[in-house]
Image (cartoon, rainbow, N blue to C red; front, side, top):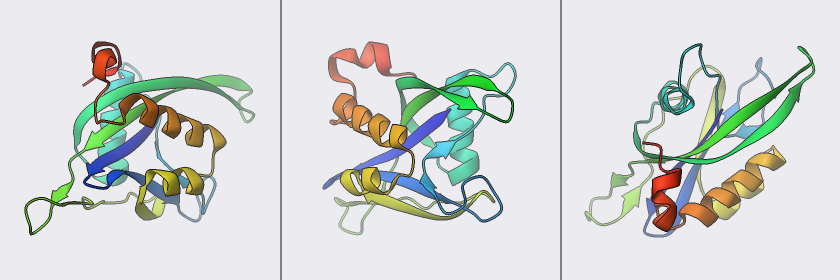
Length: 156
């Protein structure tokens, strides 16, 4: 399961990327929030849990963007990951109008984070499918909601 955390600022989208720490899978790569769905857990509930565990962020709205398959050669299985876009609350600036990046509390799997404008986030992401999913999320949710597809894409 993949979660693309986003805040909407006066200058557009800012996307949270996490850098994988040494000693874990893909050290040094910039990725979004990843996680497994636990037994009996709904994908949306797993997304909310992983967002909190990996970045310490609370959800405002959650949207279903897509699903993608990948192969795990260690177990020789094909898995399917659900990809969500998670809007989180930005922090109001001293002027009461501007919106700034919220604080992030990293877990042990990550050693750095960055809130980036959409284009920079797409450029920095390591996995090509993450680049495509982020572009799709923006195409669907550019205004901060799904417009006429709100009833289909909004999960929480």
